[in-house]
Amino acid sequence: MPEHLELLLTDEPVLDVYAHGPWRVPDGLFEEITARIDALAADPRAAGLTTDEHKLLTLPASLVTAEIFAILAFLPGGGAIKAGSWSQLPERLLYKHLANPAPLSTRMTRCDAPGGRWRPPLDWLVEAPDRELAIELARECLVALEGIEPLENRRRALVELYDTPPPGEVNLPKMELREQWHAHAPERVLAAVPELLGPVGYLEWVCEGLLAAREHLAAVAPREETVETHLVQLLLQGSMEHVPPELAVAVGEDRYREIRARFPVERRGFKAAAWQEQTRSWLVAALVSGAADACRAWLDMAMRFVAIVQGLPGDPWFPRPEWIPVVQFQTDLRRLFAPRRRVPNPLADRLRPAPGEPAAVPAAPS
Image (cartoon, rainbow, N blue to C red):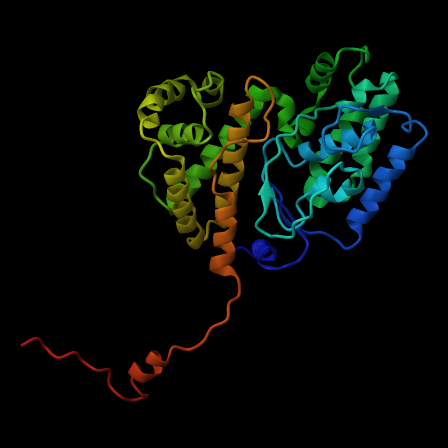
């Protein structure tokens, strides 16, 4: 197993954003970030900005806190896998603001894949009467979250976008304002935050990574299926009723037509649980062949793929239902590679020839 994944075999406080890799959370960091969030919410500029509409925060909820809750869902990536013993970012950083906080988990194998419908420049803060102040506060929400290493590349890219806003009117409806900002985003920001390409552009980005990861895994753990069947089964395990036409842009018209032709054939008799077990076995075969990183890349892209197609024509959302074996893979990784206690089997000592003694030759059959 790669050395950089060995942290997953420990009981340390770990945040594991698959697109980045496992990261040991520094002692005291989350408490520091929580203090920054509370200070921003109490800032005189934000103190009177509240909402009674949030379903998870104590009401009236600060618009700043609501904005940060949404940003935390988005920062790992749209539909991206976030795992590890300290992966519950909104719950840990906004715990005292939650209406019904649940006990925090420390299971290394826990995971989620939030879609995150937040997009720059505003989500909840769009309700603030002063639009320029709202955009300023949204930027400061991103600043307050500094220091979470797996999220830093995307966070910095978004701050850069706020620092070079598009020219023009800011008092536009939320969706028009978003389109204006996304169209203005430079290439380096899009490279870090491809969701700003829009649902179709993001689907194309994900499919490119998904098929590259599948090709790598197929080389080390061959599987009797075509690329088209692979994609059809991903759609089916995500309870899709049809092949989204946007897939023609992402994979090309010829492959799209083949997927549409295969879909009703594969749908007959498809069992998601059986697919999950077969996929789990495939990943284990690749895992023991040294392809742990490729397994994780495929899982991450597969989850994003499902989140996108379920959300079309809108943005990706929490992928549900889905049968992608993320927890099973994480369990298998620990099962296969974690340090384990060993005891000798006495049969080995009894049957093993002594030094210098020839091995026993079985008698020939009479």
